[in-house]
Amino acid sequence: MDKLLLIDDEDDVRYSFKRIFESPDLDLETAASGEEGLEIIKSFQPDLVLMDVRMGGITGLETLRRIRQDDAKLPVIMMTAFGTTQTAIEAMKLGAYDYLLKPFDVDKIKQIVADALKAARDMKQVVACEPLLESEDYDLGIVGRSQPMQEVFKMIGQLAGSDATALITGESGTGKELVARAIYQNSQRNDKSYLPINCAAIPESLLESELFGHEKGSFTGAGSQRIGKFEQCDKGTLFLDEIGDMTLATQAKILRVLQNGTIERVGGNKPITVDVRIIGATNKRLEEAVAAKEFREDLFYRLNVVRVSLPALRERSEDIPLLIDYFLKTIAHAESRKPKSILGETQELLLQYDWPGNVRELENVVRRAIVMAKGEAIRPDDLPAEVRSVSGFPIAAASVQAPDQAPLPAVANDIGTVAATLFHWAKEQPDLAVLPAVERELIAHALRETNGNQVRAAKLLGITRATLRKRIEKFVIKQAVSVE
Ligand SMILES: Nc1ncnc2c1ncn2[C@@H]1O[C@H](COP(=O)(O)OP(=O)(O)OP(=O)(O)O)[C@@H](O)[C@H]1O
Ligand SMILES: [Mg+2]
Image (cartoon, rainbow, N blue to C red; front, side, top):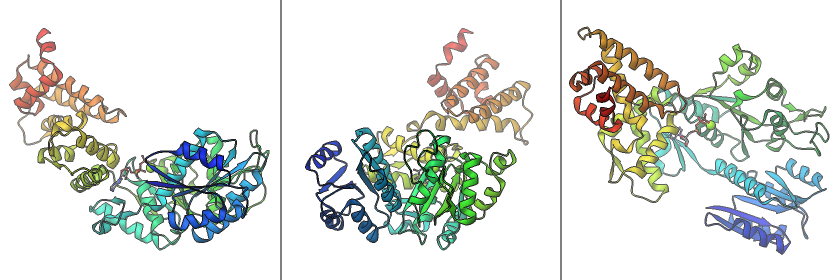
């Protein structure tokens, strides 16, 4: 459960926050002064602090300064009335997570609190690498014993001892964010803050000001000065996720930080020195983006000095059983249930599938299967159609190409081509729900070619007659074909 501490000297404010945040998932404590707040932090150990700037006794800023002396990571959101933004700016320079202007917008407060709690969890939850999983003293793990994953663990170890910029690449769902957090947690900066920023999620026009801040009046809408993430995260680690999605102008500014450790606020002309470690991640092929002049070559070389390349799951299928086991255990644990087991044939299907969504997709498939499974063990039927149906296709295509087989009749070659083409087309589609449709089309095609002779159709498809029957039932193809 997340723990939130509210420090405000006004009874009304404390009361309304209690009402806003009343939830079984959140433990809320309140304090009526900075002094009391500092005491409560020691015993309560909150994940997040919301604090008024103006209070009797020590001010909010002074309280923040004292919190920071003991803990450079605890996110603190400051609350201040309109017209006192200068204080808010001071607070950001002291490393506040964000600030809220009164009067409050409840939805906005909820959003900022949710973001800050996530940031707190990212810093706290221990990400253990596979070799450390035995200790059980972790929240999340990077599972994998395959050769490419051994390389990844080695890189994380090397990066931990240095302050070097790191670039993490790999397809979507391969664990880039997890690796970024493992690097941070093992680094010398692990007692300072870690801020993740998703460059693709922030509109282009706002990203620069989000990262570097801006001066008052620097563009329409820049009503007051703003402190960016680089200044806010001084001495800490900034995780620039989807770094391949920045404009060339922002890239130039990032290059400058890497070269001489300074930034300039948007609309400002004074260089500001910052000390921030950058970890970048992208699922784009940056080399191609450089060739297409969409990514600065000089920045690419700066970032690419230390690169962690995460393998796609299909390139390390020997890790699939380990991952299944890990997810069966951790998901059951999180839901306080008894872990389920998995049938051999179910695992076989999971091993054959090519996982375009990588570990994230496997995790989702296991999660869904746990819910679907009626008994103790997960059966093939508990898997989504695209995973179940995969076995028929490569076999059909492969049997046509197998060199040691007698030449197949022309019609077989034809269906092999159809299979391969459809299968490849289906893999390119973002929506995998098309796979069953492709399978249905293939079976219908085979039945047409063989005039509905199931024995021959099964042979053509490279599946058993029993499997073909099941598929026909599933897709209700029979009537359609016999009508034709
Ligand atoms: N090696 C691994 N062991 C255990 N869990 C993993 C592993 N790799 C990824 N995961 C899990 O898979 C999910 C996706 O991982 P993550 O968000 O790090 O991927 P990503 O590479 O950042 O993806 P994207 O490019 O889509 O942002 C997370 O829930 C993560 O915990
Ligand atoms: Mg990610």
